[in-house]
Length: 444
Ligand code: FUB
Image 1 (cartoon, rainbow, N blue to C red):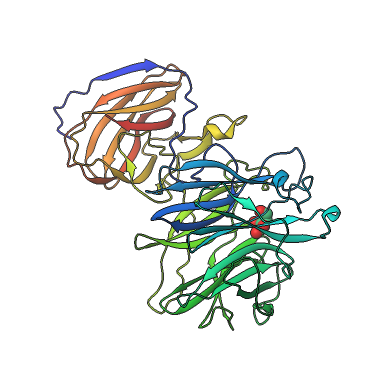
Image 2: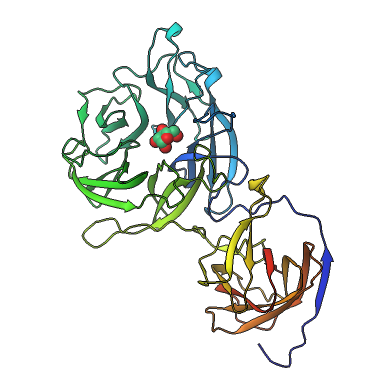
């Protein structure tokens, strides 16, 4: 920035905002979500997760399913409940066991597959898998009156090969597969155990099948040490045999015991959808879904995916940029904390507590706009000066933000120096001052 530039700083006291920007990880910000199966239908991304709720018990409590859609993977629409345990004849509606689902389209009909515990009064027993159908990806879905015959277990997954043959996968003491009838409601072949030759230590569940360049990828969560990692095996046929290849996402450092995923190509890029327990660090049965980009090596092996907070997609410069969903942080003096530990859905704040501590947030889209100001919602006891830089920690300073030291959340507006718009990585660094907490920044 031009050294002679005069910064004008305006400070406004505000009350704590409950609004969350829909972007970054986790990407659903107002409810717990888990087991995300992503599907591209009608050119749009749809995500069918399961829905954790806190029932005050120490186990999963899952009563219904929502579906979410997005065109840019940043702004998500919640289409509401598509199937509720109360509405399925064969389901024990006291079991709260509507676990990981899947969805598939064939000939204009959408099939939603879901596991549940059967009601013995309805003549079924144990963990079964049901199907509900709809004319649209977002419902309304009508459940079939009975669960699928010959399928006992959890975590359904459907796959249609290029030749039109459909397949069905599930877990329960191993990973299983069978051909699916054209009506998408019944399996039509014998059931095959697909993981028999794979390492047998650790629970395996949640199969997800996809094909890329003639290779069939059987992917699933597997406990390696203490919790579930994501692993894969490859074959040249949808029912195997599959050669075990190893881990493509490590166990979560947080100790979240489960992981569950799907892999999908959208507009030329592969994405991994998975879950973590971001909004519930002390109870890993209340989970939250995430997206990260996934890449392949030239030999078709899946490159390991490092979970990120930044997630995917461009962040509009004029939205509230949650820099706590950072790309990188300085090794000391920078940390992240909940804004309100009694309501974690209010999100996080970035704490810079040492001179030169910084946070990096990538791919902010300034478009072609010539923006004039940056707003920072922040709080500081003693006040502090924060530098806003572009491209690298040694990059050009485009604003020097003077945060007041009144100990209250307030929005500070600072005039920006000139810079090329377009897509930029931003760095926020504490120049001097005691400690500052930043909720978000936004350009105007
Ligand atoms: O969400 C309940 C269960 O936890 C799923 O069915 C498993 O895959 C695991 O994520």
